[in-house]
Image (cartoon, rainbow, N blue to C red; front, side, top):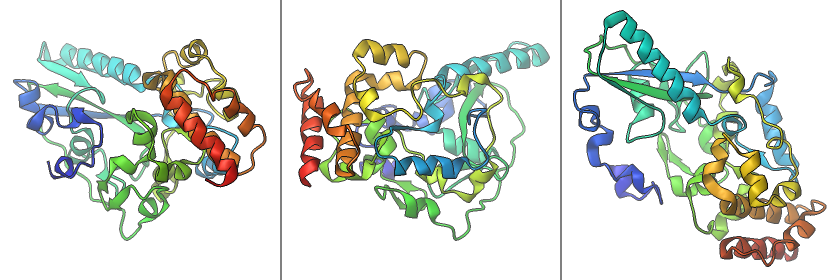
Length: 320
């Protein structure tokens, strides 16, 4: 409630729309007595052992667009929700019919807090859940049930004096341990935020066009991150290692085709172009070839939002 009162949620009005039901499971789903928490690894099967360094190296190629690792495959909402449903069916075979409802980032549920209280890991200083054997590269899901289950014990935190995630954040969105100002977070700005990206933050976004992984890439515990056992999260062609100019040329039909079944589709073509325009502006400043020419093709775009970001991006050639 304090976090909301300070406005750290930005435009994510859904964070406050349901009052305290987010923190009181039985008010969200009447009859809930226990919560079963689950997690699912998402690193693609092709992920190399030095994946953190590989991902950081993308920042040295300003003409290349960076999409957050979790979003390079299939939409996790669909995958995890179906697996939770199958888990509930298997439980029913053992105990008989029971009341339940599954969630995965889809309702007013304090997922990270439930996960940490049930022993899935501890809350890192970046607010994500960390596990000693799997890092933080996993999705969370829950099944609210009407059965009384023995509680599992939380684990002790193991961040110690490390502040790597706080120090590495490009926009300094982690304002204190376990305290995130979403309004400065690149993941929020490129995904949740619908309007113009604040001018002072645009240069800090660099070539990140959907999400940001820096606080996870720098975390020592993610050297133990696990690959997904599912092909759903393998990288799709067209989303990894692509040049910004090529992505900026996508029509709306191209965007919808390339992002079918992907979490990226939810931001829409307009925000996609807005994000890439910012990245291209940063590429222009870095002297990346072809960036200005790509931007010039959308100077008269039908979207006011896109035109404004293109104008800003072209001005970066003059150091504006």
